[in-house]
Amino acid sequence: MNQDHRTLAGSTPEWDADDVAILSALQNVGLPQGAEERLRMRLANSQAVVELAGAVPNSAGRLTRRLLLALAAAAAIASIAFFFRSHSTSREQLTAYCIDQLELLSNGSPQWELATREQAANDLESMLVSVKGKLQLVGVKVQAAGPIADSCRVWKFMAEDGKSFYVFDFQSPRPVQDVSEQLGAISRASGGWSLAAIQGGNQLLVAAVHGNIERYFEPVRLA
Image (cartoon, rainbow, N blue to C red; front, top):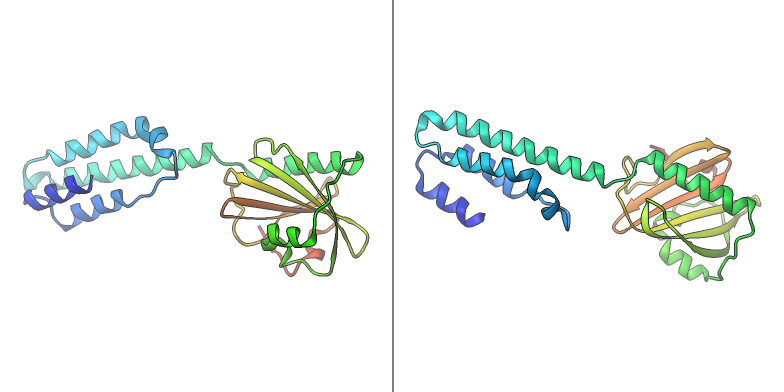
């Protein structure tokens, strides 16, 4: 596409700086891995519009061509937004999954595997760095991640006040809407549980406690 861009911009006098800027913006829109094939069919019409726009021969067609390019860009952005929306998880879905699992964990007798504090500190660094007070590690449990991610580990700690403190460690998660790289409360006292979450890179961490989650962290931004 870059070669076509240079040829078109260099050999067609009707293409001005604004046209080139629009094309450059379209070329620089990044796509997530694997998205190209999914979007190919949706963008077919948009690509046809771009080709049609390039075929407008005279200066009187500049406005029409620019409008068509803008429409193509809008269609591409809408398709990308649709892709992310259909391949992401809502904060409500995440909350519902975690609370369902917390009820099972707290009311059952799960088997917790032994783990070291060093392992927990390394794997949960972005979460534990904000914890106030000391947490005593109980263990870790691997379980199905449902619609949230490829896999999940649940870490159990005991807080200084004697309450169980859980951390869900999702690996290769789907993006969660309205959860950022900054730790934030996502649910307060839902069924008695409250949650805080942070996502970044290839990891999503959700802390949970029965009570007020904000008591266990340095000031948490409410999401």
